[in-house]
Amino acid sequence: MAAAKITVLPTADAVSNNVKVRLALPQQLGSVSPGMFARAMLPIASSGVQGQIYIPSQAVIKRSELMAVYVLDAQGDPQLRQVRVGHRQGDQLEITAGLQAGEKNCA
Image 1 (cartoon, rainbow, N blue to C red):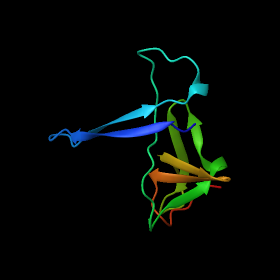
Image 2 (cartoon, rainbow, N blue to C red; image 1 turned 30 degrees about the vertical axis):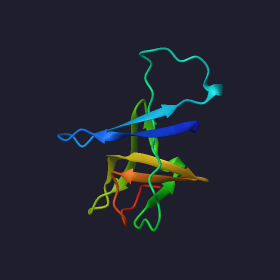
Image 3 (cartoon, rainbow, N blue to C red; image 1 turned 120 degrees about the vertical axis):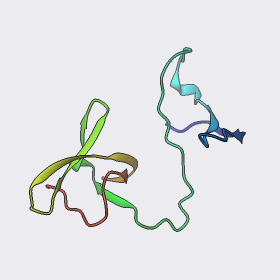
């Protein structure tokens, strides 16, 4: 579900380099109460981005908040690797952290 409006506040914390972002929630979301938790993925300008990794969505194991993929190590043994998932493109998921290009999964 996309935010109705994204506002990046014009100040940044000098120590942590954090910037506050305000998201206007869509009306079809329903009732939201103070103290509720939400996770947001912000769009990143993708003009000419190289090295994106996409894997089949069936390869990703989801257990509660853990997202992981089995990959083969140098000896050919399977190892569970935690990953961060980005955008979905059809049946493929973008992996934004946790895998390197050229690694083989245990499919």
